[in-house]
Image (cartoon, rainbow, N blue to C red; front, side):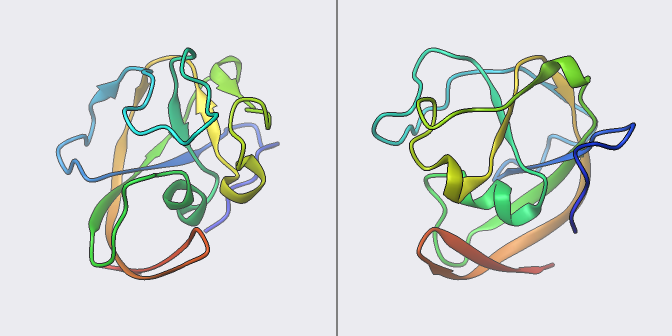
Length: 125
């Protein structure tokens, strides 16, 4: 599923191993697992326009992991477009950062069924 960035309402996907975030508000933070050279100062919530974008931005995903997929609708002023200086692999991940707290809505769970070159293949559960 692809959601356009230029619509009146902007929606993003958020992926987490935490299955208890439905209708919860999460706060921006610096991720625990950063890639070498990634911005270690800016607090953010990493999201993607597609589920695949979300998954490619998570450092510690493994084969058979189960993740909860959430949808969020941030205020446009909260959307930060990271650069290659912020995230060296930004052209691979396609991630966006939210800089303000956001409420999440559970969509479905996925299981990682294959991984190749920072691309994750999954099935909906």
